[in-house]
Structure formats: C-alpha cells, structure tokens
Image (cartoon, rainbow, N blue to C red; front, side, top):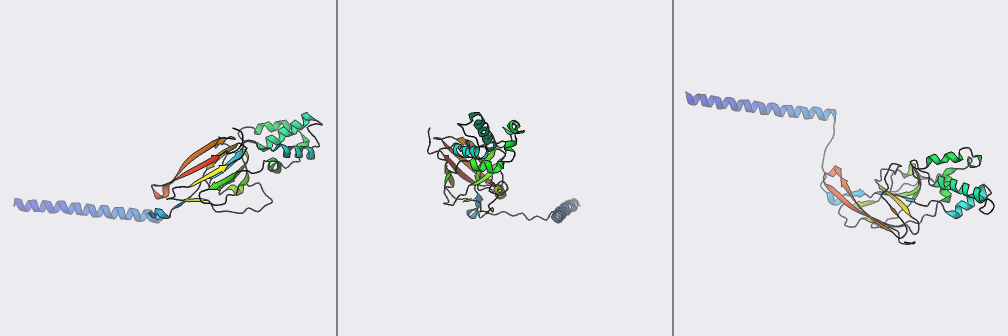
Length: 263
C-alpha cells in the first residue's frame, strides 16, 4: 500500500509538471505568433564578414581664409567702382562685407550684418555667388588607399562656404545651381582591409575639418574634428561599429597633412 501511494504521487507530480510545461510552451508559441502578426519582422544574422564593406566617413573642409584678395579687389572695383587708392575707408568697408559673407556663421557672426542692413549698395548682390566667386581655388589634393577619384563639392553650411566629399546629402547644400548634380557612389572600405586611409594635402591654406557620417551634414553645433595650419600635420583614427552585425568593426586611418607653407 505505501508503495502504491508513492507511485501514485510520482505519477501525479510528473503529470502536473508535464501539463505545466506543455501549457507554458503553448503560451510562448501563441505569444510569439501574436507578436509576429502585429510586427512581422524577420531577424537574421550574417556571418560572412569576409564580404562586408562599410562606408568611409565624409569629410567637410572649411578654409580658415575664405577670401582671395585679388578676387575681392576685382568685385569691389567692378561693382562699387572703388579702389584701395581712391577711397581706402570705403574699400575696407566693402572688403569687410565680403569677408562677412564668405565667413558667415550661424553661431558666431550672423548678427554682424546689422552694419549693412540699411545699405542699398549691397542689397542687389547674390550673396551665394559672391561667396563662391571670392573663395580661393580648391587646392586639396587627396590620396586614398582605394585609388578612387575624389570630387570636392562646394557647399553652403551653417558655418559658411566649405568643401565636402563622400556626403550623401551634399546635393542639398550644393552651391553650383547652374550645374546639374551628378550623384556618385559612397567610398567604401573592406572589413578585412589593413590599410583604409585618406591623405589630404591642403598646400598653403589653413583648413578646419569636420569628419562625420556620410549620412549627416556638418552644422553650426558640430564640433570641428581639428584645424590644420600651414606646416602642421593632423592624424585621426576612426573606428566604425557595425551594430547590425553585433560585433563587427572596422578601423579607419584619416590623415590631413599641410605639406607646404610656412611653419
């Protein structure tokens, strides 16, 4: 009799455990099925990291001096009929205006335009074309590990006119309105590449660099990655994390070099 009671007790315990496990499994299955119907998302993981490519960062370069003196002189003489010899004060007045337009910054000097708000002689100017005309020639020579051609696009940002490449949204800031925007593929680096870099020689002009995602644009609240003056060298390393692939990462080496000019 005691043995019979033990067997019945064991059977009852296992029966309860089996029913509980089955009920829990059915509950989990129904919950997942209901969740799939409400949010049908397929989750998968790619393990073939040998074929992974990732986009190289975008580079926005802003000259520290954005007015070419000879070009500014030409504009002042042609538009206002003023020379440095005929009226030095008036010449400097218009030169300051050109510098303000070329270096306009949403965060720093936008309020300085009050000085010219009642001046009728500057109201007919196309300020965008003025900034583009007086800008120094583009002398940013680029060498990449992938041997790809780099095209610098003049863009108007919240910190004035700058040059950018490898930016997906540069077409919305493009200053050459008379030319049709030609889209180009983003520069990419292979996951296993031991050398993925870009070297920029800016000759004899100081440059402020913004390194950012190719799916972003530099703004007035963006902190510049660094400034490079003549005779200086700036080396920056970046690591890109592929969150979609859990733990994949790719290291970049970005080098901006001032190889010429006075130290």
